[in-house]
Length: 472
Ligand SMILES: Cc1ncc(COP(=O)(O)O)c(C=O)c1O
Image (cartoon, rainbow, N blue to C red; front, side, top):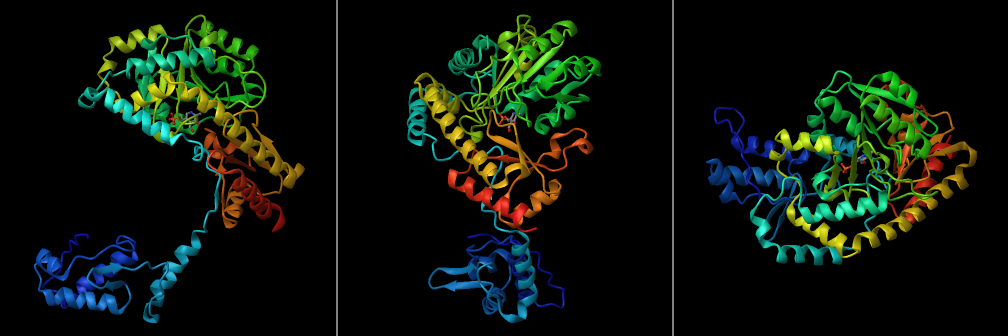
């Protein structure tokens, strides 16, 4: 049961019960009082508002008569579900408004949101068991903040993992845990200190981090992409000494930077005394070719900051990521009081993840998910190719949990999204990834496939085909 706090005007010509009735009706129509909410009893509300029981009773009777609330025997009054029930004809105006609201929001059946991950294969029972275990074994941790960098055992597991899978060279002392890559980049920008030379970023690039840099006072230098990633010549020209980059799966275009270009980028860092911020957010899911080691692992001069996350391979809701600092930045971190930043990821979760990794579940999970996503991606691509043929071009299919689609039917991004929505499919714009939006590709959309089943992917693409090619 809820409380209703209303200012009733005793001096108004309008009776108190009408004021009360109007107020509750408005709350119901605006959705603030939701379906199935139980209204306070007459006695409770009259005493809360200091009005007579008769006033509340009259207001409630009016609401019942007009069908806004239902009386359930021996239980009380409940708000009805306006979207299911039909109100009396005297309220047709309100109903029309509601109907319009419902019609304005077509039911989305297939949501190709990038960022959603597979829910079917998450090892819930193992996770529950390890969570319990971590609590039982480490009860003392419940009563403390923990290590500001993150728990040492967890950082050791991460150091082992990134070395074996990505060739990253680090000791646990260089690793900082935090609640997401964005959060860690906030720390890193504080550590680097804003410079007039700003930060160079791939154009297009991840808007989620561009915002962090901007908010921290770094001018952005958008650097165009070649077929094989960042244009190094333009990077030199930008005069920036810091570059943020997604070399193993360029976001959003998806190209993988080849070895030769990685060497050029490392040479740039050496020449400029520059810093490379390497975001390796989803390198576990590479479907074509051999894995290329991280830039950090190839960097003999230690100019690279490496970032990884558990959002793609495990769960975005864990909000757990890690950053590997090179020695000079680590020294700065320790000297400049950054250790005063308390750790943002709960110790219970860090312990659970540590157990998950040390007991071999992590490797097994990645192997399993690679197969699951490979299959989903194959389903997506083959269905698009089968239905749309040369009328659509797939971009970035070597890795990751999303693709871009260039659609050749004359529609622009907005039309592509709107017509898809009318068919119950949600797909996403790519223009926000451009710092210079006017240069964005006109007829391109982003399609994430991690969170959908194979059947939903097929049906979703069929609906897209219908929206874009059949209805015209
Ligand atoms: C390029 C890139 N970096 C980082 C992230 C997010 O990582 P986290 O969830 O750890 O903040 C994303 C998420 O979509 C991403 O696309």
